[in-house]
Image (cartoon, rainbow, N blue to C red; front, side, top):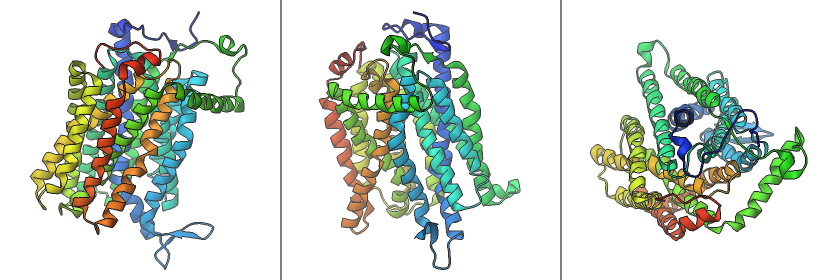
Length: 466
């Protein structure tokens, strides 16, 4: 059977093609999308957009101190950014599984990744020109949704470009490149922001330049994977259904139909489903720790913004090495054991946080260092392990479910922490302990997954160490 135009042959079960120079070039190209897209997360989401959008909304508020969204609905300016974030998460819950289904249904992974990558990159660049909080919020919603869509397709390339024995290393290197790229651009942007006067710009203009730089970086470096990655080989439609695949609206309908079949078929892979539930639990704990670390430093420890910014940079650079370190450990101990060990470290970190002394910068930095060591590795190894549990030909669909497990569970940890803060009267030291529950549940659920049996049930080869 001949391959479709632009397609590459799938790796052999032995993983031998991965040893060829062409396969290694494909790996390096794949790494570059982590390098390209991660700057949106670090520069835009983690540091600059929230305060910038909130300040813009406060300036645009009416006499009563509220800003009107539409049809007479007005909100407090401080809620604009959280509402925008929630809307982008809701859109991803609806769209990401469909994006994955479309990628598998059409076989056009590279093209779909390109559409979402440049939709997100150009929306990010548009933040520079946004002249009002609602326009800024709308561009962020578009960029964040496109960011999620592009990574669904990007992650689904992993089983196509790496054999079973190579995936931990390939995934870890990709995640490490993402942290390194994000740290490098963030360093440059923080220099511009902190010394904006020396560059002849205002603080507000410096923030806009920082955000547009993330969009430009994303767009430029995305060219590398889009030029070198190839759509995987797939059976022609006539062999699957006896008819050519429809176009236009028919493709979208086919994507929804395929998604429905995937959701129904997931019942046949209960171990894969259990892994997803474990991932929802421990990843939500991770995301909540990351999201509230700065607030904890401020409210519980009384540490200033300079300490927080410096710690963010340290975490980015150390996480680069941490992702590679845990990838190397996984090759010796196995992927599941390494993830379980990393969850123990997360549990220790959460348990130790209330013991930190107020105003102690060294203690906070040491705790952040341990977070950085396991941060990238936990996520990278989870991605590679999940890739083994997917039936062949459904990679993008299953990674769509995986991605919404990341995005869709984001509210659980925040809700739990919010309830704990309410019960304890705003005591962050006590409330932070509530997050230990997510790591305990995730650890227990992952421990219960028989990974070799799950891999065999999906029809894949079981690596030597997993």
